[in-house]
Length: 513
Image (cartoon, rainbow, N blue to C red; front, side, top):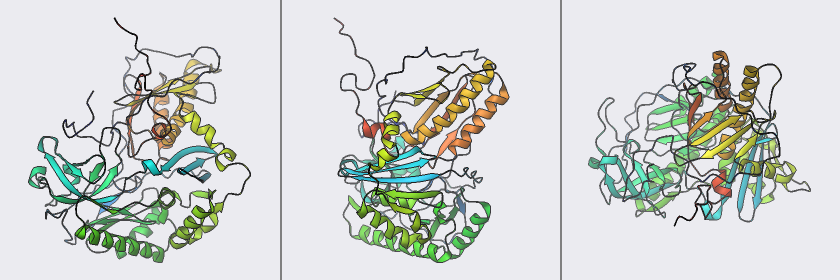
């Protein structure tokens, strides 16, 4: 197993499937029921299809966005004070993402002395959970003037001092070196030098021994738009219906400033041209402030900080798919209402101040669901269960029939159990915010049509997930392999610590003398 990347010992380049590094929580007590019933069959059969993956989403500020090329305006700028030219990798056209089935969504905002917690519910079940604390606030999205500490040609990466406790990592593909299409990208050591200043943005929070992941391709998120400075691209969210996408694309084409790219967000659905133009004006003003600060700053220096958690979540998630947002703090409610009235006034009536007798999370049974999400075992409605195990390399999910015995035949029992499992797996990935490589061991199915149906339904469930995922077909061993983008620490890291005795291994080693 590879060690975490440090300045003294570089590791191989990370990908979108970077590993989520946490220890597995201890097993929770189980009800005294009959032993788990697990079905095993020969694994010699071939898979139900090739290993072609679902098309991954285009990299952007939001996972649901897709970037499309537009005519160039010769708007290249400098990526750093060192004078290297800045550009973007050629965008790729993506198929429209299926629009998730409409469900009842509610957002809850809970303020406490140590920070803010936000839960998103679908059909009264918690599916996303966000926590912001003063001592461990996320730096993802922040923009810094960094100083290149050292360049590693063999790793095609460099370490950049951004003023945090650990240096950030900037890979060659994120430097943004411009050139004619098809030209070979210059080697990183010919572009970056030790001591050079460079404007960078954090795309991934530091995790354990790893420093923050950086990019020189800055993007600024607004309510309706994402501004991509010094780019020549135009994108529209794939979550929007075709007619709305075309309307918003036409508006974006007309208002796109020369030398900058735009991405139209899902929250822009139904927004008028005036609202979108005001959002663009705010983003252009913000970019101007960042450039002015960067020109005067001495590296390392913070030149832009993402807003508080509640504003970020409202900006990114509070759209027409959210039935209501309930806030239990009058000050936060007033702040959020001011923002909504400025950006999306037609959603103002969906913002409410909670005045119930019980704490808001108790009223909606959020604490109970969060505690269950820390368990290793998750029970399914019919009596089956899932087991989540975290390793250094990946997360493994085992599907078992447990107490579920079915009624007709074994194949039907297994198929029904797997369908319940895929729904809960998709929900738990979102709730626990599990990232990196994930392997799911569904119970073996002999019928190829059942295997195809399971993978189809699983992908449909994952379409609700804002975080970028990539799912492969069932392997000859009956496993489903997937990746989920890893940006910040998950719920287990937030509410638990590794055991000081076994350091997260889940064992107590015997004395050997």
